[in-house]
Length: 420
Image (cartoon, rainbow, N blue to C red):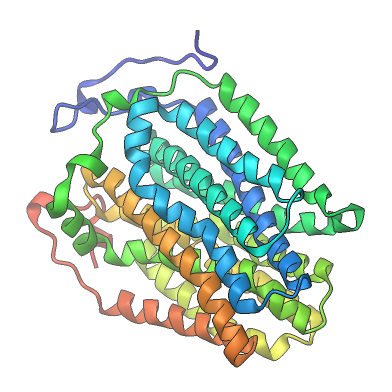
């Protein structure tokens, strides 16, 4: 018996060219709400553990370079797991995959406060990354392939909003450290247990055997087509991963060396993320009205300027806080805007493959962020982190303006106005 019963009537329009049944008939708003709640919990887990472990290792005397490398292990785990996610989901189903991801996130958080040390924590971060990869891939693929086409952009934005909300709440858990090093982890463990219980109750997700697995069957030709058509739309995933981990994984080091308290550091990181939540819906509407590529170009230009100005205000609390809110507000939506832009310009049959590629891009950016950031801080000082982020964002703007795609008739995008 399904917890969330729904109609399973399949219409003629739901049959794709391959003869594989499309999954709009399996769409359920209740399931979607539960999945984005799980994403919010995943955001809390990452939003807390990344800066918390960085601050604890800094207190233990670990250098910024090694500290950044340790933070990167989480995203190395995401990168390693991503190619296997499609096969796992096809074999065990969406719900079991999400449960496995939550369990893989739970175990490291149980062990973090019980043991210490750079390499052990790095390994636990790697395990956490494996779970996060499976969890994100299963949830985002279900939403991308099941959401009705006219709602896809909105649902993807809500997915990003839920994750961002959790990620913004997460760093505030550092304020629990005065009650003991174990307290922040205890809170994460509790909410992960709630997520496990809720997912266990979830039933009736569409069977992966009924869906076309684009990531496995597409081959090299489709991968080339995805990159040729969607290069600009795929870059925001890598940019967002790089920004997210460079700031959450490295800014605690910058802040501590500038004499900031842990509470103020957590507030600033949260301000960056919460800013993105304030701007997420307005930027989504602007993307619908003026085109997502144009909006991405403008906000990355403004974000590059903001990153270049932040080092000037490191010693000024109020301007620095406002800079984090505004810059985060602009840049925090680029991941969801990029996914929605992919849905605009790619044929529907390419979306599962494009989703997998975007996930890999996010993992690569997340892996590079703390490593490069840590080396920059160690070799050139904390200000260099923000100048480098400004240069990276400027590079994307140049690419977005210069890159043009000539669509073939067989690869007709969903929205012609986004073709350039």
